Length: 440
Image (cartoon, rainbow, N blue to C red; front, side):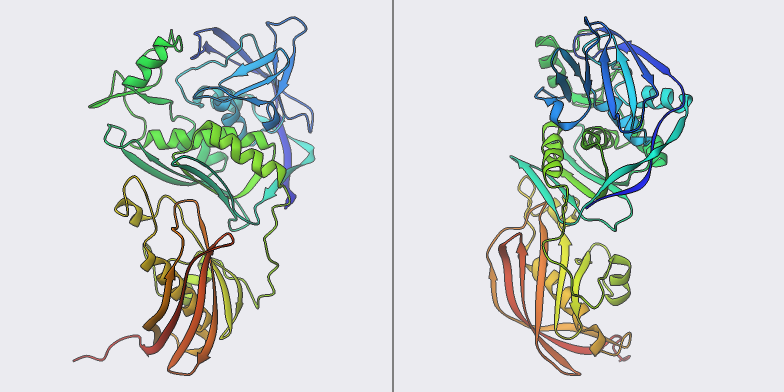
């Protein structure tokens, strides 16, 4: 659903950043200028005849390796993601950018220089609402082992999480979950720098990329760690991946309200997700909810005794107590069980799919037990069928129906689906027991 949640903003005065481009080593001057409402972010090539411009939006993105490039006619600008991240991170929606080269300044490989320049210029609100896309259903894109999924959130903010896995290298595996807003962007993301392995750096140099970049300009990892530089954060690599996501997702030209989860994704997959969101802006839930009341995670935790890492229900979409429940488990790459099940090919264990279904059933029958003195426990599981693997990026939608319920037991029939495909189905028997066993 597209809505408006704040006023558009631009900068209060012009400001400039100078530096050397990472792609071909160009000397670059980039000037930010205030802009009118609804004009978006436009890069103007002052070095070309006629000063052609290109607007930073998804339909102007063209393919390029390891960076985000936009082009319209003769106006082409490469590696825009760090500039776009600074603007989006600070909620600056309209800006005219004059640039005298085909690439942006690399600076230190982060958004820090752009962020500081924009902060020094200040911002002002414009008399026009900023559109926001409130996610109503999951949207997922994949490429090989990489997956990127946008999920509905709590309806209030923008959350990004990323799982990075460089295997047996000095980078290793890193994960981060972050509520993105101007304050967290400045302190947690803006200073995080571009990174690559030493072998990747050599290959890029041989291809003519980065002729003037040195070890002090970005993070190059050798077998024993960073070469000729020092980390700003222990997990700086995954922070930079999220920084890139902020910049690339800004090409939608709308605020996103929801939770975007990434597993090994890069610029091309980020752009693919933006395209999917752009063509499906209504993004309404697949079903309307005739529920008595939907439950968010805070309410679920008041009903279930489970806690991290074993709370496996994220949201209740529909509920008729003692009759039926429709609940959701968002399966992200950050799930702790994926570290061992299995490295390189993460698959959610079938027993945990059944556990998630059981927890949803526990919510459904919670009004029929004397909480907190009684709890619901599984007594038997029959007719189990596991039909589809569940992997990072999937949303598990669990529908359970009560076949019979008494004060001491309940019988439930349920299925768990990913999209229209059944992942698991089972019949479960529950008994209600004392929450605390009597002392021996």
